[in-house]
Length: 398
Image 1: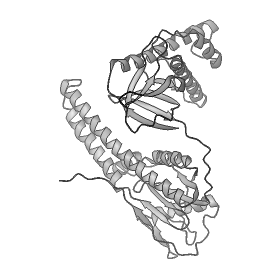
Image 2: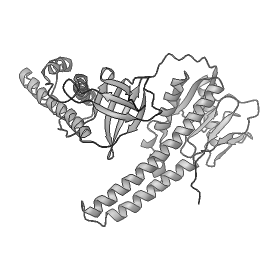
Image 3: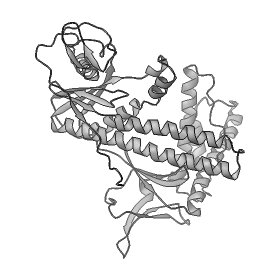
Image 4: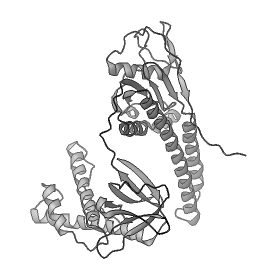
């Protein structure tokens, strides 16, 4: 699935629609209590599917929403119930079922409620139906917006003071690309990605992204110091809070833009070089065991390795490239030259056998070789020097 986001101006209708979705959620809470009382299972559903089918017939159509939008809220409610039961089965005693009333909630339109049109003046618009007798939501679209491809769903999302329409498209999984190469990827905090395809080592420089994280931390510290001097919920307090999150949101957008540019360039290079499989080291749970001091821990806990993996995965999948995630244990410690293991404290990995190479490049080499089943086998040929890529960032002129 791919999502295209569109910011839209505020209107009272947007508030009304999301409030109507919240009202459906509240009705689900009430009906679930009725069902539990009637079946003697207060607070626990022995048969969620039976309750869901019963509730579908009981939900009123009084809300100014499309019938499928109402069904989507009901489906979302029972997904929360199933997630709660799964957490309880896994031993999470703090998990709670959906019980809170909501004032606003995301409204969803499915394919049958979505239509596009062109006005007499050449404007493009999307029409989102809200059921018989209710006015549809009509939103103007940019000139370059593709109206020939209908999205699977459209979500009305309130994101940090701004309404957005999220157009969700289903990507065809039947893309055939018979690449033969394998590339190993080492995801790092200093360099977001370092890859090795058997011949070339590519280093994607992370200096710009790291500078944005440092700026973000400084903005938070500076603004929090000013906010703490104000009376809570005073006029100046709210002014500083809004200003703080406005700046943070801008920096977050710049960080994600940099990650998108790096991952897009990497996946396109893989496609052009006939790569059929991308192998990424698994870093899940790495934060649970780290403790290198306050400053380093802050960097590692802000490390967006999961986001990088997600971006590579869906972009490669769209081009027909397979993505595998494997355990990267000892890949940064094993010498590709002789197979011995030792940790390197510098950015350059140096072994007693005379092998010397970029430390993250060694990790990428060994991740690829581990996937191919030859980790630890000595390398005979000389390694080509790594090639670096920097982000092309537009700078403001003085």
